[in-house]
Length: 299
Image (tube, rainbow, N blue to C red; front, top):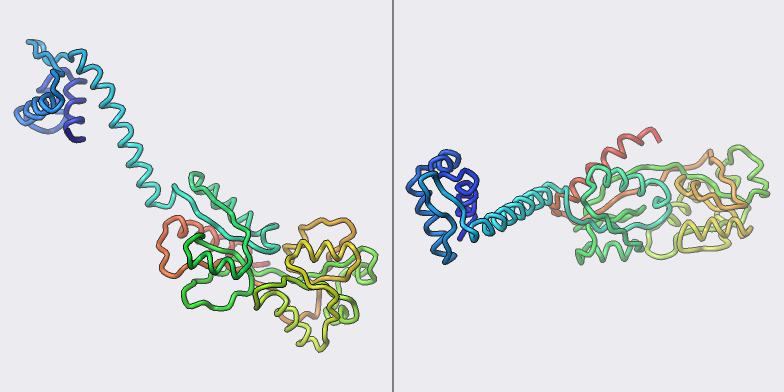
């Protein structure tokens, strides 16, 4: 028994006539008759009573018609799901995240992706940069979001957005009384820096900016991520230079100020993935990333 025989059987059962069923199927009557006879022989039951009026289903035939329709429905669903998976509209994508971009940019990108592909499951993994690279190579994730990544021979990188660099200060700090802060003016004050861990990182960018501005930063604390850094600012441990996405952290006791006179005062967020990955789901996410970058380019 094959799917073609099921289709032939359903047509004969619904038309109750070999001639009409043959016309519906665009075949001649003799091969259709042979297929029905072969199906009955394979099943070992009589499916139709042949009458002068046409083909009448037996009780076994009525049961088999219900089952045949169920099978056809399952095959159609499987075909549709397979086609949607091949088009990147069904399945799962594992995404690694880290840093302050999870506060605004990454959720915006992923929500836009989920709106376009509602049947694709997005699974998030919080990982350091080194963990992200290892997970990509082990194929445990499909794509990662991070900042300041050195070129890797087996990975592709794509810009998501470029953000301003700002200053987080305690609300009673002298710099909090200003509308904007000149970057060299932060030199005397204790500075909280982040993230510790895999280098290069935002720390290296900050140190380079300080060197270009002609001063050595007064580092008081080094912590693992933006949230801890801003929390220390709130506790009075120092001030902190952050990407603008961190300003969405509304921590009591912390104010954010624009920085001026700042060398290279922007920081990029990139996504990266394995070279040669032809996943249509990944392609769909990268398309959303490109659209987001174009939409936010003025910033």
